[in-house]
Structure formats: structure tokens, C-alpha cells
Image 1: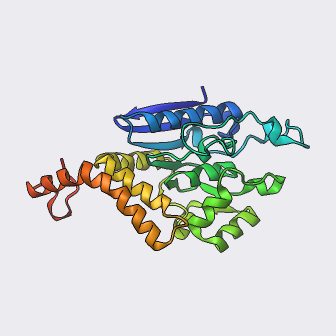
Image 2 (image 1 turned 90 degrees about the vertical axis):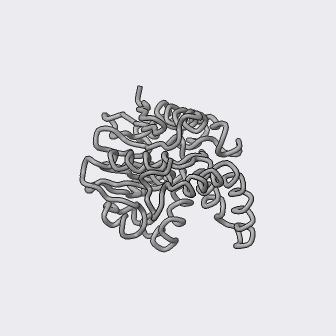
Image 3 (image 1 turned 90 degrees about the horizontal axis):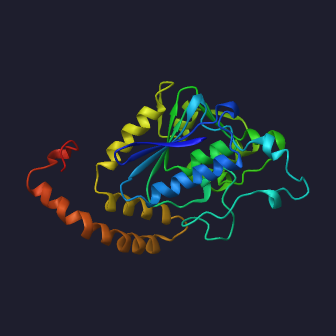
Length: 271
């Protein structure tokens, strides 16, 4: 099995393990990865997921050996990529060749990146809420060399993260973008020593999982869904989205504070 899940309480690490192809994605792996994240999203015991590529490579993109077998005149017609349910595209487009890249989950996912995250692998990293990259890891639109376009969200998400000019330069040149540069331009949030990206991502996931989850998901949802809205529309959405969390988590949390927990910015004892 190329995809497995390792669980530590409410934190799930979803591992793609196809070392012979540097974790390049074929249809079977894409289906398995999609199924894993749909299971995570619907399991009430799960709070935060990490996406990790085993063997020193995050993902080398779409498996070009598989792509080379497609009908050049009508390649998309031969792709076995069924529509993902229950979240994501609503049936308007099929699931992405890289798997979960078009899903809209209601829980956070952190990318733990070692080695290459290139072409579609970069798009998988961009799909995650934020990114932990090990020193020596890198992004890059390496598919630029072969005429394979970005069709798993790269042209949508990259400009939103780093800005249009920077995104177009990365997309059009296809160049290697090392972890340290990614940190400087906001393309990742942490750079760790080589071999420790998963450990750091799991540490962050456990910290997030400690918090009241209705509130975590409400704030995450509001931040994501504010894209494209005017300020007033976004504020209205934020209010109605946050009202549920305030009822579910906020009053009880304020009572714990009143009783002496978490004073002076102490995150250590909040329950």
C-alpha cells in the first residue's frame, strides 16, 4: 500500500510511500491519498493532519511515466480520476491527478516537506494550510520542461500566497526554489534541520489539537472563505461563522480563565 496513516491521538500523519518513484503520483496513489483525507475529515476523533512523503522526497509530481502512456490527442479523457466526495469540487470537475488537491476540508492539514516537492508535488504542498520545510528541500515547477501544466491548484494558490509577480516568475521559469528562499517569501512558515520536518509538523499539530476545535475550525474557515469578498461581506461571514464557536467553546473557555487557567498568556494549562 503506497499510502498509510499513523495516528497519535487526534493527530494523523498521512504518509505517501512510493520510494521507487520519489513519491510521484499515479492513479492508485492519488485515490488512496484522497480516501485517507476524506476519512480524516469525517472522523470525529481526528483534529489535525500532516501530509508527509517517506524516503526523503515529499512528491516528485505527477508520474510522467504514467502520463506518457496517455492518448496525446485526448489525455484527460483517459484519466481514471473519479469525482471526490463529499467535499471539494461539487461534481463540476474531477478530482486532481495528485489526489486531494481539490478537496475543501474542514480541518487543518500541515505539509512536512523533505527533499523535492516539485510540479504537482508543489501543488500538494500549496493545498495544505501551511508548510514546514527541511533544509535542503525545495519547490519548483519542474514540469515546465515537459509541457505538463499546473492543473492541481498551482496557478490558483501560489499567487495568493506569494503575490502575482513572484508566483509568475516561479511558474514561468520553472526554477528550483530552496527552503530558505521559501521562508523569506512566505512560501513556507518553518525551515528545520534536514530530517526533522515531520517532527516539527507533528509538534505544531499537537499544539493546535489541544485547543477547542469548534473555534479552531471556525476561524480557519472564515480566513479561507474571505478570499474574493469585500470587507463588509467578509465581516458578515466572520460574525455568523464565529457565532457558533462562541456558543460551543467561548463561554466555557472564558469560565476556565476566570477560574485561574491560562493567565498572562500561558498556553501550558488551559484545561
